[in-house]
Amino acid sequence: MDLSQLTVTQVLILLIAVAFIDFVSGLYSAFRPPNTFSWDVVANVLETHVLKRIIPIMLPVYVALSSPPGQNHDALWASALVAIGLYVTETINSIVGNVTTPQTAPPSP
Image (cartoon, rainbow, N blue to C red):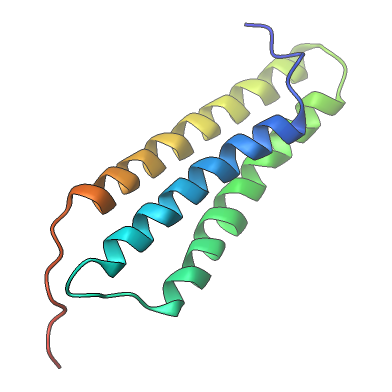
């Protein structure tokens, strides 16, 4: 598969779009009755998606696109594609859970 035409921007847009869809589905889930929305969730999404997943995934993508083709280039792309695939799979599962899981009231203290 020839990935030489991809740009860092295109990969970053894909990852941010997936994270945004997960965020919106999470908001949908939080605003359904019994309305469990909390501003802490917004910070949590930024931390878990952007800082802990998207930025580390972008490192091998950037290095692979910046390096000349060769053996290391293919290994970097392979690691980036595996990471992207795992991230997208994990996030799709989260989106499906946000949209389909019925909400229950949080436990009373």
